[in-house]
Image (cartoon, rainbow, N blue to C red):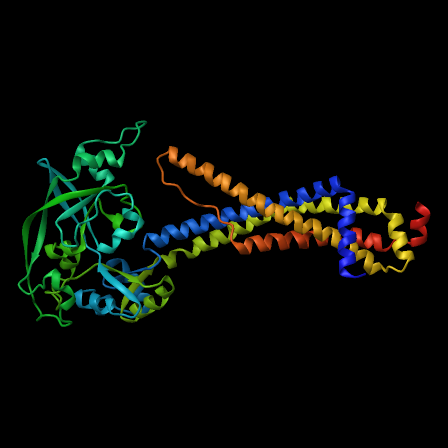
Length: 466
């Protein structure tokens, strides 16, 4: 039997039992819709997590720490590296790392606990320095006010909880939390007085020329003094950040520009640990954040820095379990979505078996005029495949519509909760094609038994049945 004749005959048979075949096709479409909807949710959530991590600057960042850090002693011993013999994470080393291939910038981690005075009241808190590139990260997307006017400006951005502390607004149980905009209004433009301990060394290079320092250290026994200083800071913004978050900028409650922080020469814990080192006149850092051009270059950059004698950490090391979680989530969502399609396949079997009983005479005539078993099987496979493809197309459209309705409803809820909208539903083209192909294959499998049963009919018995 030729393909055009087979197609015409299959479509005619489907039209004759329109209601029953339509209900079967709708059952397939509902199964495909549930499959597409569930997998789209898993894919959308994974893409949302990836977007957030990429925008936060974590996916393209490697944190470099010295093996002299106390928390790295045990790790170094296992690798056969003595902490006392490892390299210092000083300014010349930072410059060396910054000039590695595929590295955009290498920023030192400058954080210190100090006293800030506002309205003549002291407040002890942690101050963190952030680079100018942090402006493009999601950490400062919701800043109320402005970002720093320059990387050397004596300005400060407050974290929400510290802004509440300055205004004397403590969080009360059962009371709605104060909006960030309400906190920024009375604070932006005001001044803070920061008291800190400055490392004063005659050989210490200024921060504005930190990239031009020589790689060599000073003579052994270089010394410095500690001087108490005060610095006025202008409040330019307030951000709603969690101080306990893993992201770099959120490890403090007050943020100042990186270049300005370096120019202060604030006493760091590393200065105390390395007070007797040969590099006593060099800036020492507890860690350095290295940004690469592309997340795909993270692994190569980590390997290079490790060969230099330092420890590294990147979010890729911590996201292996996250990737495994999403893989398992997609698997379970796909399984549960396929259950509805499996139920729909039973409807296909029922429809085609009923068609055999109704069309025994037709099958007998086809065999009497020369149609073989394979031709009868092809006819039933064509009918099952047609219902599968049509049901798959309708199911994908229905799943896409369900996803957008749920996404719209969720964003309306988020808006009422004063939260930014999110897009967590994604139907990629490969999912569309896979869903239709899967529905087609399931329909063919469901047609195996009816097609085989129809092919085994004896034409004499089939004609006698009528």
